[in-house]
Image (cartoon, rainbow, N blue to C red; front, top):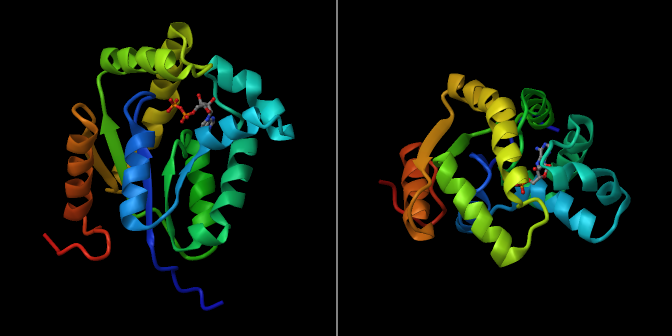
Length: 206
Ligand code: ADP
């Protein structure tokens, strides 16, 4: 191994539950040709399929708490080592604790890589609670009851704000207003990334 950094774009998307991370993550990942990796989706798939991991995390996820870092880190490490993620990725929902930041740094440093940019979707708490209550009706997500939603907002503020502070210190955070239509927000994300020099292949420089 040469030790040279791997080519590719390594992005994170963070924001409170209900800010629309999953939707934007898929759009960004498609335009950059990188996989969108959501730890929430990985946990939910495992719960649905009744795997050993799913059984372990079921009660934690449905109550809105955080899965222990040791388990979450191992899952992300495995996923980032898969072939499709070697050339870049967009992580949605990870890292959410400062220990997860340390672990992600460690995983990426093994190949001389690092996080390139962090998209922070900003949304007002009342607005996101309302959106999640609507999603509960539309999709029937088990962790979308009002109590659990409010709990998840609290956990986010307590655990994930320090994560954002760490990436701010590194100058990596691109803040984007998460209110508006999916297309409006997607446009803002694309602009914020382009301003930082990240553009999907085939798009002219701004
Ligand atoms: P939301 O953004 O709506 O909170 P996610 O789909 O990202 O939802 O996550 C759903 C749940 O999965 C979380 O409430 C938590 O229980 C678990 N989870 C997801 N990512 C992590 C993580 N990085 N660390 C710990 N738990 C996680």
